[in-house]
Image (cartoon, rainbow, N blue to C red; front, side, top):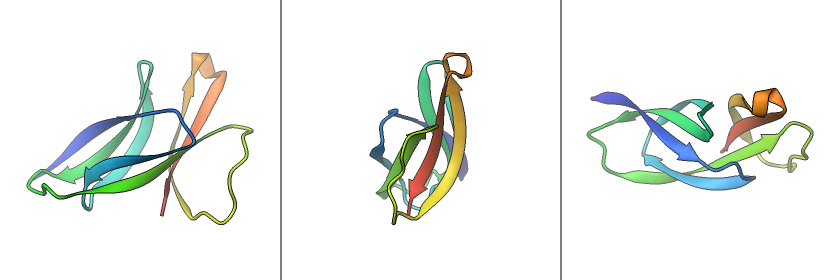
Length: 89
């Protein structure tokens, strides 16, 4: 069965998030004060893998030579802080 799960993540440059294998990341947004990823997962799949997630603030530098897949953009503090979330693949 497929289900959408939420995964809280940190607002940090790069991190590894453990997800079920073949999870489909569909969104990244703030929920309250917490940055979260949402992913469609197969609940019968118990095997996991580490997925590399990068969070970049508007105006901050990004490393060259990294292939990224855009996940989403979110805001904090009334829009004064904006974060762009990518998966490094």
